[in-house]
Image 1 (cartoon, helix red, strand yellow):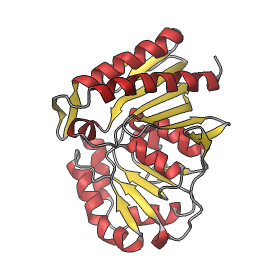
Image 2 (cartoon, rainbow, N blue to C red):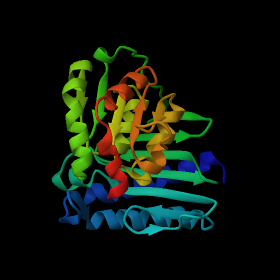
Image 3 (cartoon, rainbow, N blue to C red):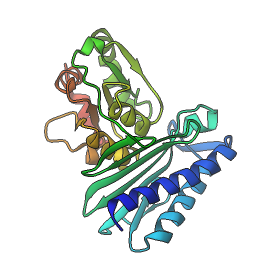
Length: 267
């Protein structure tokens, strides 16, 4: 199966799961961890996506947020069945289904779907990125004061929340606006299509960002960790931009005392 065919399969799985979620928009949630929720539909969505993907590609591995899975196969699907569970069970519109395909350790296909708004983003290595079938590119804006950022308060991790909050005052003075969607996959797609110029968050997981990273890169965006030598796909500390404001944003995020970032390795 070609990468393009893998992308079409991911789109089919995302749309099928999305239809199920739209028909069951409100389900009780329970805590998975501090400030982290899971619903019955998270599990059902993952099971449905797994059945579609592995039904067509039984040779592939599968790694999902809710039930884990194979992490060693040459080719594997990486899935967040509902990215933005809090939004989902509260009835907010911005939750997504995120499906990435990794081949020999490299992310090569990304599919992000927002069921309530019927928005579909696809990225295929070497073939570009699309939004509802139309090619997309990152913004050309190079002036921070004219730029919009998406971000997270990192409320699940006290050390990360403290670090981000310490820098927000200066960041809000330097950029036009800050927004929080509640879905990292959605945030990455917004950078990819020029709705905003940058996105930053700490302590994410591969299933949160895998698909969005492919889409961002194929749309011409820039990606890095927060500190030198960090791989954002490993450590989860991500700065994603249009490339024009990347150095400026990274400098602001690393201003002052950065010792709190060392706590990530202690928790």
